[in-house]
Image (cartoon, rainbow, N blue to C red; front, side, top):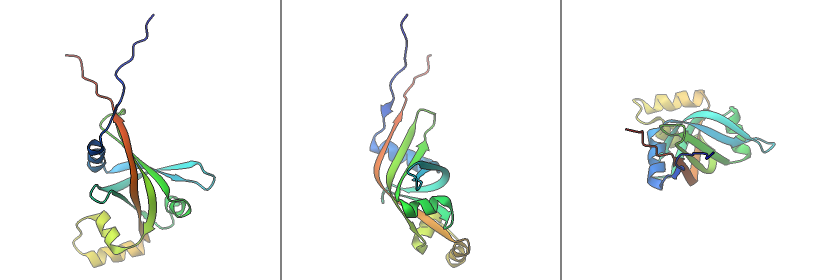
Length: 145
């Protein structure tokens, strides 16, 4: 009895990985707990291919912010169009309250001073990830005619 298996996953090119990161807006952020185990959190993110940076907005007191302060090594997993396609961005993160980072995450805002005042009241910070490694795969399956 022979066992059949389908095609193997294909490694995505840098261009494909950057495109996938740019097309999506939600991913799973992995941070490191004090005991060394990973902590996972679904996040809204913004990708800048030109800077090779991912920005995530959170509040200063959240667990993921505290974990980044303790250990800046993080990874973001982003799902593709199917369960077999994904991209992972690894890198070092830093927390910043700088107005330009808050605005870069938000995009176009009508009243920047009011927006920044609201962000300060909410104690918003940006987890800014400098991406050092991108990887991921896709499974190219052609449906039968």
